[in-house]
Image (cartoon, rainbow, N blue to C red; front, side, top):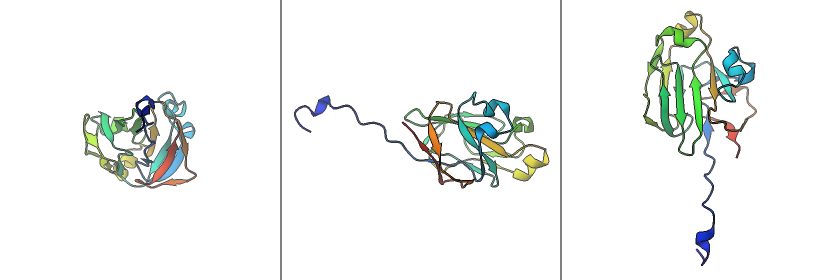
Length: 161
């Protein structure tokens, strides 16, 4: 550091990787069946039609919301990035049936850590959709990678500054 090194701006927070929280077909959020998510009222994002019942944390952060029914999770990263993962559509009506919750509000999670295990047959057997929106409630801008199928734990998008 030179004589005037202290005048330099603090380094920008590096964009951390964001991985898919679930495995399945990717659907643009605005093409989803649920008007609340499709209208982007809760934020822009994407949806994954689940083919695997394990849903993981897409980044290291805090669980800011974990619904007792197991159907939705809010996560916040240290740099302020927030996302909502909503498992299935109208799944709140199952009152937790088919959801094996692994975290609670206030927990610190690591990328790849299991948030919930979902019994896909039980959810579909109850007539519920497995389309699971993932939206950025903090308003983050992103570019989805050109994929038709998401694999949990693999990079799915690039965050923009």
